[in-house]
Amino acid sequence: MARLRVCLLILLFCLSPALQAQLPGVHAGVVYWYQSPGGEIRSSGDDYADVEDDLGIGDDRAPFAWVGVDTPTGLPGLRFQYTPVSLSGTGTVERAVFRFGSIDFSQDTRVRSELELDQADFIAYLTPVDGTARVDLGLNFRYLDGRAEIEDRDSGDRERISFSGFVPLAYGQVRLEVPGSGLYAALEGHVIAYSGNRLLDLNASLGYLLPLGVGEVGMAGGYRWLDMRVDDLDGFDADVHLAGPWLGVVLAF
Image (tube, rainbow, N blue to C red):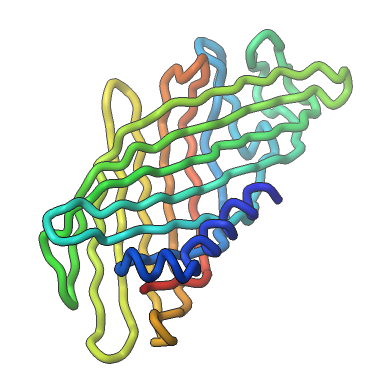
């Protein structure tokens, strides 16, 4: 619920008349994302646990939201995006044994698991092409704040690992509009790869904006793919992905 409030606050901030008057070029959205997870996690140096097969973590739904400001020509535009990820599940360990932190989980152990991976994006970008076809290029400083917890449902033993840190990413977006129709299509990407680490976040969307008062309001839907490999972030390793469709409300002023 707290994560949903953050997304709604972003939307209300964009609806502020004072903001609209002072900063034309504001664009924002609040959407719901159907998240289908996969991959493996481990504490550094130990065995991997499969997110689905060993931990029983399954599909979930959560919002994500963004607000951006196109600044005057020559200055970089700014965008903030918030993506909460909170997954949980129950399952039975399928492999012979795996160690997470200080606890060994043997085959057939019943476990309860939680995986959180909240992400805050701070993006600065330039727009070298602007018109019915638009191109944004820039840098994203993404803050990852996460937690992984596994509990033995029979003994009550549990291990929790928290991790956080900034990850710099290349950012790009291509957007095509159908003149006079309000229809648009966009493809957005955030990417980096170095020293065994990798983060790829792709988002394809279709939307419709309807002129209303001082701005435009509409609907958008799309598909987002997040693929992440982390090597020893505060003692946490992961090779996980989240993917699924999303649908929500978009605004432009």
